[in-house]
Image 1 (cartoon, rainbow, N blue to C red):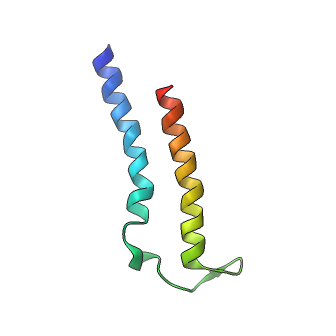
Image 2 (cartoon, rainbow, N blue to C red):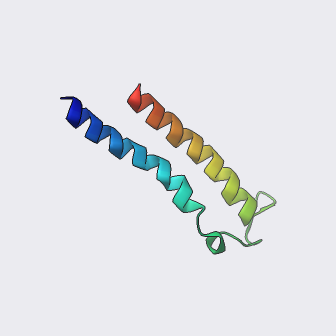
Length: 65
């Protein structure tokens, strides 16, 4: 039983790579346009990934607890 639980927990850890991959390639999001709520897209994109990363980290934490 411990081995199957360990394999499942590895899959939850993969969620932590999503934000890393999303900000890995700057040319994808390095532009001033479009403006979203008065902020250039670059800043908005970075900020939204901070929120998404916190949610994903909390999810992984709660799945291990």
